[in-house]
Image 1: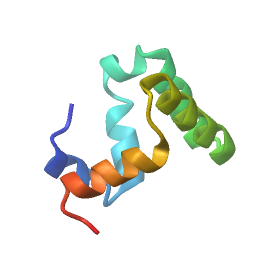
Image 2: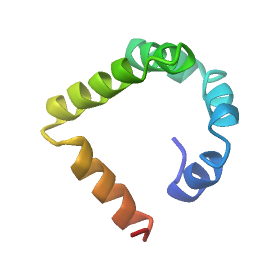
Image 3: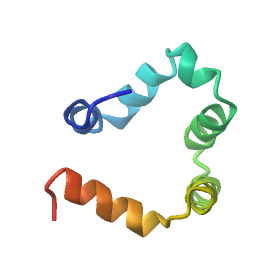
Image 4: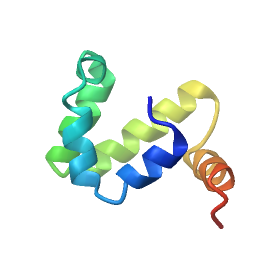
Length: 77
């Protein structure tokens, strides 16, 4: 798992980040992660949004709460 600073650096180039994480056996052996990566590669933004919303529901949160938490942790406004 990336620490927050490494994650922010990696997200400067999302395509490179995606290629790097797909090399991880841990990520690619996770069916949910593999499905999300395939949706991203296929340009299925609606599917990705539904995926994110479903994961949030399972965790008892919302995408907006996650976004707010990330912004606070990274001192972004």
